[in-house]
Structure formats: structure tokens, C-alpha cells
Length: 162
Image 1 (tube, rainbow, N blue to C red):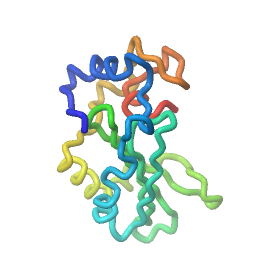
Image 2: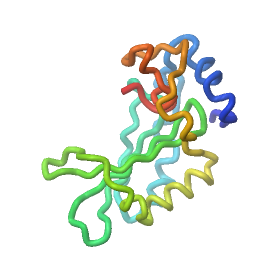
Image 3: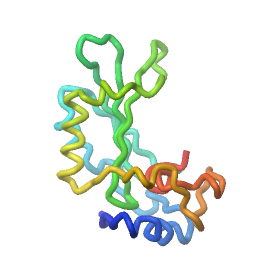
């Protein structure tokens, strides 16, 4: 498991890890089920799906499907945990009637118990959220397969190149 760098070391660490091109989780033997069983317990009674694929991605990706209060919509909490450094990213979406992901949900949904439980679990495991100063920050000298050089950001290097 990678050591969480200080925020000061994050860009140089990413540059070192990607020096020979994007790491391939399949070839490196990354555990596509890392944390899955624990997360299912944390998110109970909601359904947790493992969406992890290392095709253009550098993280575990789990989706938690749930309903909030009396709302009849189904919401998905996406949970990304990076293999590059000990950071996580969470995002909420709503499923539309065609079962396709719709807009990002307002913050009111983030107040649900499952969100807080997942954040607590991630912190116990040593993961931190990406500091706001790295939002959209370009990582010079790193090449990804899908992104143009001026679109290679910290988030894409930690989680997924798309």
C-alpha cells in the first residue's frame, strides 16, 4: 500500500510513479477487491458494487446504491481510493428513469448517514481527501493515455484518466 505523501510531495511523487508511463494495475497486481468486504459492512443495508477496472484507472471504484429519506430516486455514492497515494474521492449522482447517471446531486444528500460512515471508514484506513489546492492542478511531465498534456491533473493521475 502506498505511503500517503505530504501535500508538498504529492506532485513529485506522481511524477516519479508515472516516469515510465501510466502504471498498469493489472500487471502490477493491484487488489481490485481492496476494502470491498469492509465497505459492504460500512454501507449496510445499501448495495455496494465493485466497479474497479485498471483500464485507464489507478484506483478502486465502488458504487453504493441507496435511497435517501422518502425520496423515490436512487442515488449512487461513488467511492474512489487511489493506489498512487492514500487519497480518496467521493461523488454523488442520481439515476434517472433510464437507469443512467444524471446530474451531480446537491450537498443535501451528502448529509446522509452512509456518506459520513464511508468518510469515517476511509479516514480509519489512512486515506485523506484530495486537498482543494490540487483541484484541477496540472502535473507537468506526466503523460496519460487519454488526456492531452495540458489536461493531466492530479485527480486524473490519482484516480482515472477520463
